[in-house]
Length: 293
Image: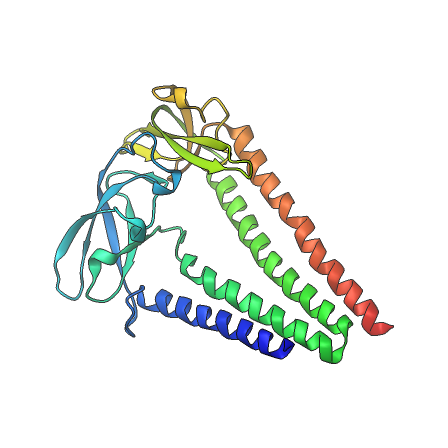
């Protein structure tokens, strides 16, 4: 009975991993050809509508060439398939990926690589659950000590990967903002997200959309990173508020409205991962002790 359940569990997650890998490789075309990657350029930035969801990001119009036909396409980033941008300006260069022969089914990939690996999340999660199930089965055969040690190693590896990625992003952001420029900005829209708790109460969170113009550069429209603004910016009445924006001169897509809040949020995010990583180490220690005993 247990073996049957574990077999179904592993088969289901293995199937999900295979589907995710195929969609990543082919650009969700459903065929066997690899996805096409081409450079794109923002030719127009649209202003987000107040009340829209944060996940919508900044809508833009992109221009890129389909290498199969040589046609220059100019298309808006509408629909869930295209991905989102948190900062945009006219002339910004990014990359798009789409199934062969279907350029209108593109997905945006920024130059920093954000979103490039997003399609591999499902395969990674599926692989984790398959390995966890196999380790549970191993514990029935070789004892719980080996199972605990294996689960601890798997958990530590997964959390260690997440911690390294977060630390790398933290260092990149801090390096870019080491000598920030400052420009006068204005909150031009307020995005809204609703969340219903277990008691049925609806909670609304507000996210500002700001515009600012670096000297000698196009106007940037951006959504601040979570925690990079104070509570007075995250309010419905913040619309029209004029504020200073601190941005990285080398990459204005990296900016904040409050340096202390930005640093505290990123630091707390890193610290929050450590206890989970230590839990994996603890499992390994308990498993090793059981094996030694």
